[in-house]
Structure formats: C-alpha cells, structure tokens
Length: 304
Ligand code: GDP
Image (cartoon, rainbow, N blue to C red):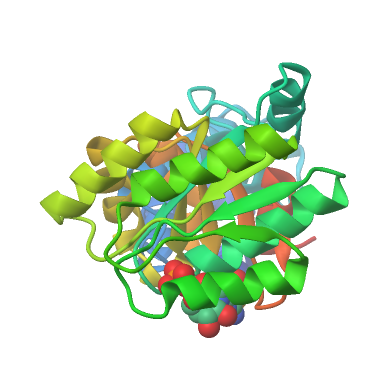
C-alpha cells in the first residue's frame, strides 16, 4: 500500500532545505507536493487541503532554530495529512458498539452491503461476519444478489466456511423479500446481525437504484456499507459520491489495498463524501480486514 506515494514523498522530503522554509519559497514546494499527491490519486480537494495545512504549519514555525529542515517538514506533513483524515465533519461509527446497542433492544442489527461487481463485496461481507463472530455476535446472510448468476453459490460458500445460515430465494426473485425472510429468521432465532448482499451491476442503473432503495426501506437497514476497490483510483470518489446520492451510504470499506501502489483515494474519500472509511481489506483471507486507523495510514505514507 502507498508504495509509489511513499517513494515520492521520500524524494520530495529529501530535496527540502532550510532556506525553503520561508513563506516566499514555499509556494513551488507546496505545488510540487500537491501534484505528487494528485498523481497518486489523492482527490484534488484533499491534496490542496494538505498543501494549505502544510504551508500553515511551516510558516508558523520558528525555523531559524532548525539545522535540518527534513524532520521539521516531515512532522508538519504528517500533521497536515492527519488533519484531513480526521475531518470533523465525518462521523465516527463503531459497528460492534452499534450491534451491541441493537442487541440490548432485542432486535437484530441490519447491514446492507453495496457496491459494484468485482470490488470485493461478497468477500468483505464474509470478513466482517468473521469479525462479528470473533466478537461473539451471531450472523445470518441474506442472498440479495438475485441477479448475477453464481452470486448465491458464491455467498453460500462463504456461509458454509463460516458456519453461517444463508437465506436465499431463486435467481430473478425480489431481493427485498429475501432480506425480510432473513430478518424474520434473525428475529425468531435471536440472531444478532443480518447482512444483506445486493446486486452490483452498474452504479447508474435506474432499476438497480430502485431495487436497492426498496431493500433498504423494507429491511429498515441500520448501516449501508459501500465497498470500494482501491484499485479504481480516481474513480473511487466518483463512485462513492454517486452511490451516496442515489441510495445514501453510511460508511466505506476500501478493498485490495495490498495490491494498490498508489492508494491516494484511501486518504481522500472520507473527506470527499463526509462518510467514514470503516475498514480496509488487505488480502483475500477472512482475517485480511483492518480497522481504519488514521495514524497507521500516515505512518505508511511517511515512515519515520
Ligand atoms: P464482488 O463481486 O464484489 O462480490 O467481489 P468478490 O468478493 O467476489 O471479490 C472479487 C475478487 O477480489 C476475489 O478474487 C477476491 O478474493 C478479491 N478480493 C476481495 N477483497 C480483496 C482484498 O482486500 N485484497 C485482495 N488482494 N483481493 C481481494
């Protein structure tokens, strides 16, 4: 993750000299940094924000005291990136806490998985289910992708691997009806979490949007998780914005960060749509799911 961005940052930091910490000389440096981030798929707004933050941090310093500019700039850059990752307008969501709250209210917690085909939606659903199981919560799957051939079998495999009951109808059936059956099952058996898979044909398909709205409305979904393939790069923000406009999303999971050399979208997507990145998928096995941690991200981009 961040291989190219980290390398670029390293080269950038090495070039900075003490002279350049004066306000006048900072302009071209900030421009170079912003360009570097945009080339590595950090969204433009976030990249410019990081540049502005860095300028503010550096011009507020008594830099005459520093012999070596690099550690000073490094620290300021870390703080600048962190402040974008910790955008105050992005709500925090603790899923395990939310499930617990629903449990105390004697009702299942309903999660709807949204995303385009191939992003890792089904795999992430299984990874999250495993996390819930580790935390002693029981799970039922609703096979709500009744459109793509093979999708029910694919989810069924994960369900078998994890010892989870899957509620499914035939292909072509109404996904909302599948979701309701799964919720009925959860209510009658005291299952803690219902996870609804959904079809992910095309993000701008009108029928899909209507279908998703119906699933969400009838299931009274608590949490809509949007699965994003980090390899989609600059398209990540566009896709998330579109889904958010169409059906509303509550949080994001970015997948395949293990094979993403640029990774800039991970830094900017939450700020762009004001929804939190909840987890990162960093591999194909069920344990390859990391809680999103801004400090960790900053350390990956700018190592000590
Ligand atoms: P869906 O069509 O959105 O349900 O996508 P799948 O869950 O079937 O995943 C598509 C492919 O991406 C599969 O080969 C997964 O193993 C792979 N995949 C999912 N998440 C990750 C991840 O975090 N890292 C890597 N390397 N591969 C992943």
